[in-house]
Amino acid sequence: MAPQTVETMHNSPVRRTKLWAIGASLFALCYLIWIMLPTSGWVQEGWISDVHLTWGAETSKKLVPLEAHIMSKSGDARDCLRELAGLSVLPTMQKVLDKVDFTLSYIGTPTNNDGVSCKHGPEECMGNIIELCAAELYPDPKTYLGFTMCLARDYQAIPQQSLVEDCALEHNIDFSKLNECAVKDDGGHAMETLRNSVRRSIDAGVVTSCTVRLNEEIYCIRDGGEWRDCPHGSGVNDLVLAVEKLYQASCHE
Image (cartoon, rainbow, N blue to C red; front, side, top):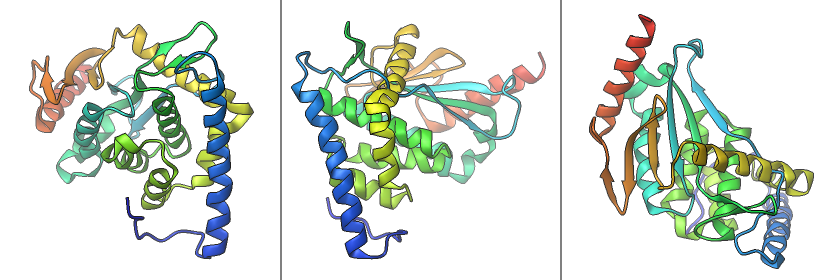
């Protein structure tokens, strides 16, 4: 994928090259550790926790829980995020941004050795980690979801360094900070977050990427390129109306 043309703090080509070289080495180290482990799909324990993005200044008691459960290397996740990303950029959606408490959770399987197995292999676990790190470092949904959506557009290439670099530059994310998050505590910090996120999906009974839950109930599922189990409709406007209805109801409780 051709690099995006965006402004960056690192205007010097030599300085930028050194930064990417360091980043590449860190990512390579993580990946080598994974592929050398005896259990397929295992990622070392110790990483991140659930990512909550509160859109607005309302008290948490009034916010409507909105959650998406995904796998980073899933085409259905790409389609699903395209709809959710619209909530943060379309002017017509601004009226609901301060009424939802958004959580992005990941789908996988905890292993007996305190790791995580991902459906699409270790590369998907790494992609999940990169996206969780971005959310932790840049909690503004316009930045975080934009970055995640950028990766999802070319999900089959996740977690290739060139893709991560391009999307980081496009959304003003410091690539070196992503690396630092991924290798913090020898990878322990990131794995703990991923494992906690996976546990959250399991506790919710979610197994399909992408599953959208509203007010802690399944709202809609994107599966095999189609929406299903969407009693209130699968469009963005349908979701906005559902959020408004729940939010108004909570205000009168």
